[in-house]
Every structure is written in C-alpha cells, then in structure tokens.
Length: 334
Length: 189
Image (cartoon, rainbow over the protein chains, first blue to last red):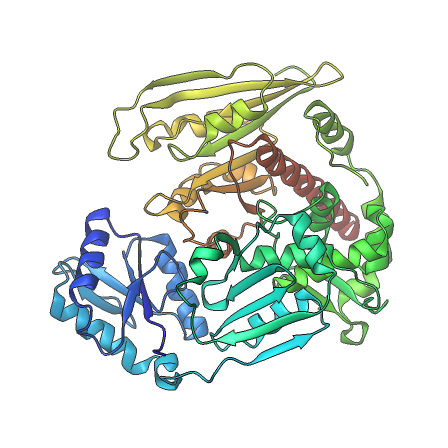
C-alpha cells in the first residue's frame, strides 16, 4: 500500500489563480517526488496564499507558533517577498510548482517517516464505550483509518480528514444509543478501501460525532473531583453540535469564569450527571480548561462569590426573557 | 426610539443571508430596500439591499424588538454606523464560500466597534458544509487579534432554529458580560 498523498490548498487567491494551481497540479501528476492532491482544507500540507488575505496572516502566525503548517505567498512579479516567508511569483509555471512541492516533500516529517507499506490490519474487540475508541484514534493518531463496528453499524474514522463515514445516518438519537453500548470491534487500516464509499454514504465531521457521543454518554463512575473548577477556551460550535438551551447559558458563564461541577449544577438547575456529560463533551473537542485546587487558581477562592453573582438576575434578564417568550425560545434559566 | 423598543443589527457581506435571517424570525414580512444588483463582480445574486432590511417582533408587554439588516456592499458602509447606534447587539453573518471570508468579517469589526466592544457580537458562518476552510478556529484567531471574544457558529440561516441559536447565544453573552462587569465594578469600589 502506498503512502497517502500530500495535500495542497489555496487561500485568498483569485478564482483565476486558484484554477491555474489546480490545473498545474494535474499536469505535474507523476512528476513530483511524492503524490499531491488539491483539498479545500486549511490543514493542508502546503497552502499557496494571497499576501493580503487576513486568513493567510493567521496561518503564518500559527505556522510560526507550531512550526508545522506551510504557507507560501504567491506574489505578483516585482513584488517584494517579506522576510522569513517563502514566496513564489505569478504566473506560476510547471517547473516552479514541482520545485515547490518537492521542497516541501524533502522536509515533510510524514514523508520521511511514513513506511511504504503499513502493517496488516489489527482487530481488537473491547467493552470500552464508543467515545473512548474515538478519543484513542484521534489522540494516538498515526494517520491510519479505523473501522469501528457494533452490530449492524459500521463507522470508518478518517482522523487525517477529521471525518467519519457511516453506513447509517448519525443522527443525535442514533449516536446516543451507540454511545452507551459496549462490544465494539476496532480495526486499523492503512487506507480506505474504495468499496467503502459505496456502502458508507453518510458523512459526519469527527468533532460532531465526538461531541454528540460525549453529551449522550453515561457519566456514572467518572465524576470530576469536587475541588476542580472548569472554564472554556471558546464556545463549542452549537450550530453543528447537539445542545440544549442551558448549554448556551453555561457556556457564556464558563467563558468568563471557572466553576466546579457542583456550582454549575446549582446555577443552571441541572443534575451533576448532565453537567459532567457537558464537561466531557467540551473536553472531547479540546475546549475544556481544568483547574485543580492544588494549582491555586484564583477562581477557586472567588468561586463562592462568582456563584452568588451568577445567581442574581441582571438588568437584562427580564428583557431577554420577554424576547425569548416572543420568539418561542426555550432558553433562560433552567 | 420610544421606551421598550430594542434594536438588533444583522450585518455581513453581500449574500451572507441577512435578509433571509430576518425573514426567518420576523413576525411581519420583512421590509426590504432591495434593488437589482449591479455589482456582479462581488456576488452573483440578482438583487441586493441598498439601505436596510427591517423586521420586527412584538413582545408580550407591548414592546418591540426591531431587526435591521445592513446593506452588504462596502460603498454603503456609512449606513452601518447609523443603523448600529443604540443597538442591543450585532449578528454578523459571513459566507464561507467567498474568496476571503475572514477579511469580510474584519470589514465590520471597526465600523461597529462601539457596539461590539461590550461583548454584543455573535458571528454566524454560512456554507461551511461545502467550504470547510477557513475553519471556526480561524475565525476565533482573527477575532482574538482584535481583542474580541464572541461566539462563532456554523449556521444555515434558512433555518429559524439556527437564527434563534445566534440570538440566544448573544443574549447569554450579554447577560454574562454584565454580571462580570458588575463584579469588576464592585471590586474596584
């Protein structure tokens, strides 16, 4: 089995330049040291960027921090290349593109380390819940595709593309059933068999499955330490994740201050088990910040005052309640 | 504006879905100032808003929640400030299929800064199913550069529930900010 292709994308380029890059990539197929494909994903191995693009600037900053992502500026002839940035000049030619791609291949860690043949698939059967399997695949990802089966349900997890293919629609209700089952068979594969696409037609972003699984999973036996407080790095993408109105209220509080699970339970009026499920869901997508008492986080000493404050309805409370009533929204205090 | 009247602003580039979002929740047919789109280079839609869109919701106490959509084209940017005066909050809609949607978002951050500064912003990103880049993380990174903390969601504003999600997040964000600010004032005193 051959190593997966490297990925190229464009950011902020004009449609004309983007089409040119795509066409050139087809022309150079078979002529580069490693195979390349074009993707519409920002996490590509190489991004050709428009210098004025705000997104390109963000990627360059991330690239500098992580030393991982590659952003090459596509400049007009005569333009000056900024320091510490790799640049190529428009119009890009076949020779320049091959040099550029092979330059990335030479220094790409995956290309250096990836064996041409992956080991044979290894199957394991476990009573661990689905969430644990998904977390293991994502946190210990070696880039390999995994198939998870339970009864008639079959999932193909593609960690590199953060996507799950399934033979059944992964509606939140179905995921909730799966989340509390055991006996999952897990197999690792070097690549996706072409026939899988015929039978697994349902596509779900991996973070959505992780979230929906965690929010529905039984949290018995996984209670958080009473001394621990929790906050959030940012809002979960509730546009895609299953949620209840109280999740929004809790998130707005956790963005600003840290609370213990017990405090949240009192403030939101939900059982601790549901709060724990929400915390697990946030943790599963990397948004949860845990502060243990031993770390002497300032919020620990402020937590009682924070609880008292959060319980008091503010001046907006009645106004927003009237909006919610008029709009038939289920939000507000739980 | 009389008492018990509140104003919400729907902003965003041309084709981002402002008119659609207002139509999804307004109790009256939205009043639009749409004209034939002569800026086909920017977006291929047939019509575009030149002054504003308007919708409204009657509150149970007789008050009104007024919904205003800003014109999408930058040449009407003088309208953005006029409309946002006294606004409760901003729902900023972005179309992820545009060439540089993060630049689109940034276009609105400075002109609407007076309202945004007080945590009164929520960002809805459309067409993420067909265009996965930039990611939601990239939007947060771009907002962080400006020192702005606001919820960012993938949404389809043709669905009323998704528009309500944006509003609920905005309301919760404002309430939470108020509590934190009240706390900071107490500590400073």
